[in-house]
Amino acid sequence: MSSSHSSDPGPAMIRTCSIWRALEILGDTPILLILESIWMGSTRFTQLKQRTGIQKALLSNRLSRLIDNGILRKKADPGSSKHPQYGLTEKGVDLFPTVLTLYVWERKWGTADIRRNLELRHESCGSALNPVPVCGACKQAFDLREVSFVEGPGIGSMPADYSRRRNQVSFQSDQPSLLRGSVEILGDRWSALIMRAVFTGMNRFDAIAADSGAAPAILSDRLKALVESGVLKAVPYQENPVRNDYALTKKGFDYYSVIMMLMLWGDKYYGAAEGPPVLLTHTTCGARLVPEIACSHCEEIAYPQSVTIVGLNN
Image 1 (cartoon, helix red, strand yellow):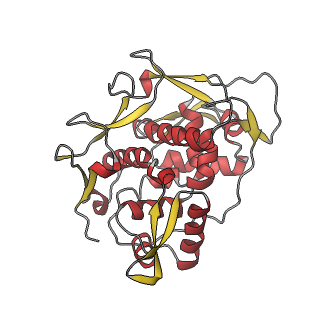
Image 2 (tube, helix red, strand yellow):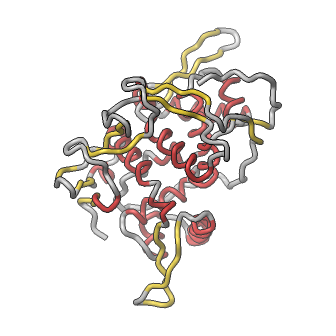
Image 3 (cartoon, helix red, strand yellow):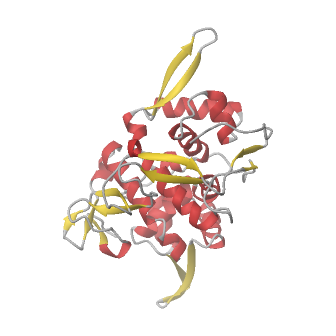
């Protein structure tokens, strides 16, 4: 995508972005751990607290936020009027492709055994599910090298307003997790916005700052963390003072599908009235790219109702 602007919109403006709007809700580790726990079968407050390791007050706050934003619903438990159950709305279910791409990244790059003990099964064919992004038009698997980005009808500038949050805290839980490592990037809004910038060809500090709206101190901190985690690599282009280009490693390159699926979810629920800010094309077949997630074994689209978790003891 072109990173040029016809005029300087000022420091308080950034490129219009469905990802930014989505991250206002999902760019938060507690939120993502709650959603993962619900996908894994936890429906009551006590179950969610045990599985996520989130403190009671913070858990209550994030559940309310998810309900207010139409991602969760709260309903009465027929067996206990004092303990309501939480479930996904249609908007919440539509995050499933993003979850599957997080799972793929976690299986490849995660290190904790507690994550690897869990597996997804595609009930439609009975095989272990290896989710693969495919083009909705030609049904062929693709990666970022086969995707072109152009400005869409919703392109423009928007205020870099964001909700202020306390610093993320660590969560202690010995419960199995499908995604705990992979959400550490998506669960930090600034890290995810940096990844968006680098994916679209912005590799230098000033360009990433302008694209993400991150303050210099925040940007320096997140870039350092992403380099230390092996997602980005710093390539010096100037010695005095030292200045770097930031490039994707293989580990970082593989995160592209997470950002892409989140963008499409954001387009659906938070897009501009004029249309998406970004249009994707599958260069192999030439069609507009509307990605789907398929089972690599049977090549059918993986839907929530056709996927189960193996190795989970609720």
